[in-house]
Length: 199
Image (cartoon, rainbow, N blue to C red):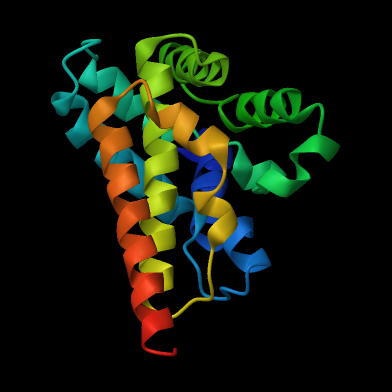
């Protein structure tokens, strides 16, 4: 009997949707062709894997970090990317994400399904060093992207840089926090240069 993957249809659908759906935060700021959810997840996963080797205290499980980064936004395929400004209207966001993640992974082989769900729950709880690190890298990837959009001519994305929760998430990991501040300082220098030039 041939081995069929038809039972994996839901996760196939979710991955496909992540490639089509744009990140809402960029759309709200007039960036029509901004990154997709999949592009952001890929960036976060790559950075998390590479940067986990740079963190010595606390020591991190790089394999867990990579897997957690891969799954951290999968639920958004079904519930969408809820922007920061709208969070106060979604008091049950965590429950929504958990329900979507459960549906997406429902038909996956039990051992892998349980591993994925455990990783997602750990990320949501933000209690372990790995979960806190992936959350921090998630924020760093966003700042790197914001800086690139501004360099390309997008109007100021000031609220991204002034969001205190973003930098609070980065603080426990000094190299990440320092790089985020470097990006913020470079941004300030660019804006000052444009002002002096009358742009």
